[in-house]
Length: 200
Image 1: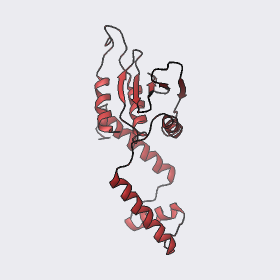
Image 2: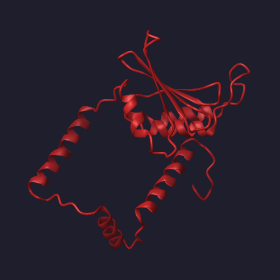
Image 3: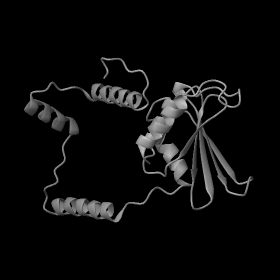
Image 4: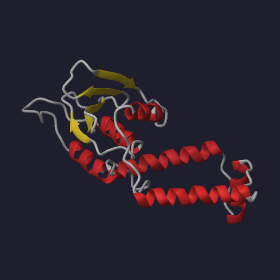
């Protein structure tokens, strides 16, 4: 999935105004656009979706695959709910539905990705990517056999690296908050949403 294309399409949707559907239809809310962007960002290995506004002010993503499945996500206007549905083409009775409410940005991406995976195949690795992956696995196995793979608590490694660079050590929860804030700022910039000068 090309996130630049996703961001471009969502920016287009963010410019819609109320009444876009022949005088009806609410403009997509920023919360629904943010949720659509975050969700697509966690499904980067999947095919490119079609992205459309919904009359209620949400965003809809659609995927089609070679096995005749249509998968739809509706990102509700509140930015808190994803209505998911999968339907076999030509069979209106063969429908699977699910609801996801990712209160935390990382809470439901795994289950959501698993659900999508039942109906859509991820984009296969290229021959070059497969070869590169095989080389990395082979190097790891060689190091294991030579006894060079030594494991220790990750935080000990972080403290050591901070000391080497003369940087203050920050606990895991602080680093997690910083990472989340950085990811939010990157998303807002990608969507051309308001970001304060200090955040740029």
